[in-house]
Length: 492
Image (tube, one colour):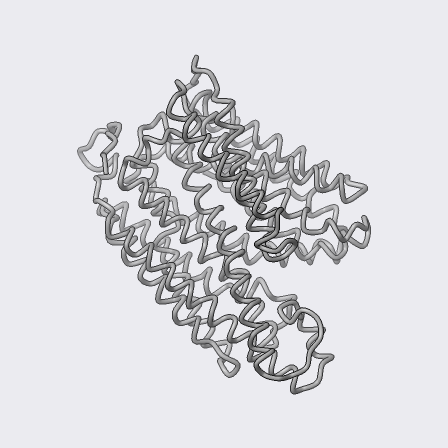
């Protein structure tokens, strides 16, 4: 478990630690026009490789593929630290992301193979703690390392921790050796990778680098549709599909995949726009932006720990997704009421509610997904749950970003306050240089933008409430007096 926790921390931390170091990196390597690709390359590689790592683990053994992903991640980290240009850094970050996809899937699928679902819930709190630590500590650690050492060390710091994880896994992890004679579904892997990459690029570029109606975005949408349709066609005809579509015949698997998508949608939207509101409207320091999310992470961590213990003792889990989705929708609705006069304490209380809702869901969705499949498909189930959450996060940031910017722009126009430039892109430092009436109007516009974002978040969260109602209470394997039998697929 120590090795798995360290590996998960590395995968999650590395995407967050880079943000605060980016101004320094751009200053050293130049190429500010490629700045976004330093993050996008990592995200793309992680998302695209996630299902492939999961299937390779199922076919050829989870320990070997997990160790391989750690090595790839460490090589990518070392090369990223040695980068002498932005192009090199982008390429090496993609290599890092390729390894990170295997880290996240490997952790969940190995735990699924080692621990029965009934007992697994007790361990889920550790991974919730890792998520909270990475979200809060990542930006702070990135700033501290960059200020006191060098930006190169935000990548080098992975090496000692990664080597520790590698050594612990090699020595302590004992899994049966697996060697499949089935052929790898290369065509399915290529089509799925192209489809996922296109979707992530649409959500990354749409409304920012390119207009939603531009030929680039429409072309990517057509490519994504064609690739995913082709993928579904291929998967029904190969001996060993990359992602068996029969898994979605299981009601619980389909419903928790949808819930995971919406959890990612809401969580990444909150992580993106709450600090913007608190820095711009409430005047909080940008340096402490990571700490502003601590109430949400605290609510998520505490609830996740309690839920894990209850599930382990009772074996019952269906009630928690229903409570969690309802509380998550309520948290979004409360956050939509934030205005220019709302205090930091009020915002923190509302964030605790949202975090509590996510705490009911973050690990339960993975638990139910893994309990819904046979052991041979544990990697695919873990990678699919991770993938839906990742894609949900990408869509959430894109949709919420479009809603936010449109509402801010419309509010500024309606206020009649003259202003030049993109009103949705003002930082706290720029805002302080403007006249008081403009600052007041912009504070009001940002509050309206936050209202729109979280109101829609509450509406979308209601879909997850409906999905949770359709879950069935399938007994968790490994309970008292039960054999760890393989589940049979239950048709919808």
